[in-house]
Image (spheres, rainbow, N blue to C red):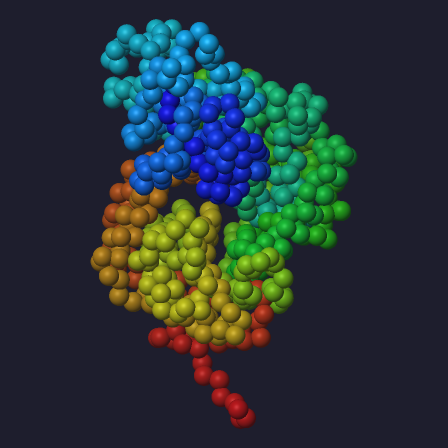
Length: 620
């Protein structure tokens, strides 16, 4: 049936909607225009036409069109035949079966020609329906043809225990079962920058960049990645001051392939000249990037270790110095690997695998294998114990160009003050971890939103009281034979002296009264963070590997939580008082014209209130 639509005067159509031509086919008179024949001046699309029609519909429904603007038309967006869902105006009544004038009905009347075809690109009509192949399948029944899912059950829960087996060559195999189809497997080695005293500093950094390159079985890194892709796997290598870690995450059904690949990567690397040259370029780029980052925390961590352990063990640089890049070659790397990449210093750790299967794969691929550097000529390993020295390392630098852009970070001076804590094998390790969590801290702006750690001491006593403090964060670095608790702070260079005094005062307050509420909050937050991190399979892998590498066993999460709950305020005061008796380590970066001397910082940490000595001047 024909519809009565609304035709508007050309002058009523707002810009950019202008008529291309009057509507002559459907009874429109001069000066009028059918809605569906309006076209946008910037190009017509069905979506914009619908939006425009909808806007006019809302306006007309509220006000109603003038009577002299109503014309008969067979083609309208308000009642288009065959279009489902088109809006219809309640003020417009339907016409009779024929719109021809009275007295002229009959054979002499011919139907108007059909409208022109719609423009190309007209959106197809979508139909959403629940009718289909599974319409009659109830929600309580499994869908036909779909694999049945496997769920963890209470009776089938894996035991939270880490199994450890030692092979004949001294290699330790540790595994932790975990429900799921994927696994994380890797080799952890007791090697790193702390063992480079007899070698060229930077070897561990080079080995990290050379990991998963060509080996005796694989011609290139691409071939290794293609092999892992068959099992949905990814690989990574990370080095720290005391540990090197090669890890792969893949489908558990490819465990034998993964262990064989790891054995080849660790024991049979080719170390070609081309790979060494590419590694030199990668190391050089990383050093340049380290000095250009707006966040100086990695660089300050290097400096605070260098100041705390002057020239020994963990005080050696983790990143390769620029002057050593050209000196490291294949012979130097083989000499280091020959001494430290031995089975007795390795742990094969796996999460999400069966222990017996992992042991069988280790015996097949890691037992009786001759490495690429040979089995003879190894020198004695460095078993030096870390010697805490204290001291200061300063690096004066113009930080104004570190963060260019329309909204650059303001020029800041960065200070990190630290004191010796304890190793992770010591009984006081847990109280120090709680103390670090109680100090907390963060930046004045957090990308994740405010509210995280707002009741920690560095937030309450520092960031909330001093608006000019840009950052104040506590860190705890712990190793097999030592540890370092430090506070990193950032502020305007003119506020450096006040900032250092605030840090020293917070160190002194650590040995004072400990509120029960803040202690319980820190303990709860530490346990929450521990359990949340251990939900990730790679984190479990690293925890298993590092603990077995250091202690030949693993403390389970519920054992650590029990130790955390036992921490009392007296324990916090005791470990803080012990820490404050040592010499401080200081790292400073940026404009340091207002930095107090090391002697003044040491005197402030030895005082009762943490204040710096007064500076008296003859002339003001």
